[in-house]
Image 1 (cartoon, helix red, strand yellow):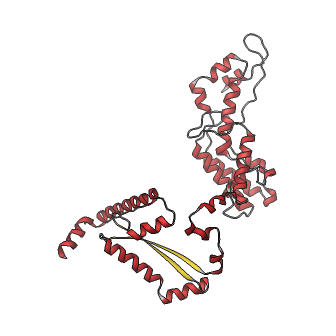
Image 2 (tube, helix red, strand yellow):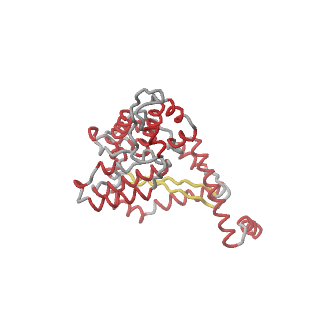
Image 3 (tube, helix red, strand yellow):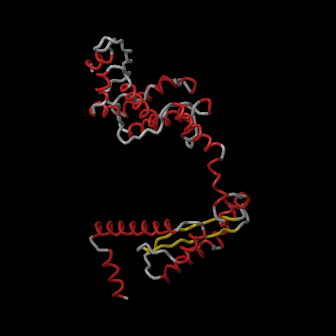
Length: 321
């Protein structure tokens, strides 16, 4: 590091031409940044803060590493710690959108730097500044793989070239969360989902939608259909309907029974219902695959705990029948 200070702090190059000295980085290149340091700094800041007005935004911003070695995961976790700290100190709702923290104050946000977005940009800008130094030695050193590696962030690809792009990104994110822009595609859902855009039936308690999903061990189409019918009968029970009416008003409930078997096969009417609900065939196939994976996992756990093969149990049952 002392060598770097001498090289970057020279007033003239070997030919005698004046060189504008570079500012020494606040954090040395070799200094690692850990998540524990961020948490400790937040704890110290919380103890000194007397309330929402006592929080020093400059202190929060200064926690972010710029020139130190750091992984993208560490930056992401640091951001989470800062947002958790602000929610607690400022008494914000737990579902406060992320954009509300990082958007500029003029745009309606808290103007808290997002480490995961800014640190890669700062690292790239620092490397570019070394490449533009008039000193040939510094420019040559900046091209060395070992030096460039110091300024690269593992697992990160910066998408911002300057602070203006960063600000515009979080401004748009905040508007998407607060002005309903993100719900613009709700009108494009199938007609069967008309309650998405017209919630009057839900507000008045006319209809209660119930979707019961089950994975059964039956193999044939008959037992699967029977399992589905039994579910619908369960929810049309008079006592249960009375309890639903107490909560939702005088309306009725609409029941959808979705049934798969342990091999991942979908019951016929279940597939029809999913299709009517706008679920694409790719997602329906994926659901069957996930059910099968879950069945295999359960069978393996059963075998390890009991020493009995799940397939052998089914074989004995069939022979006894």
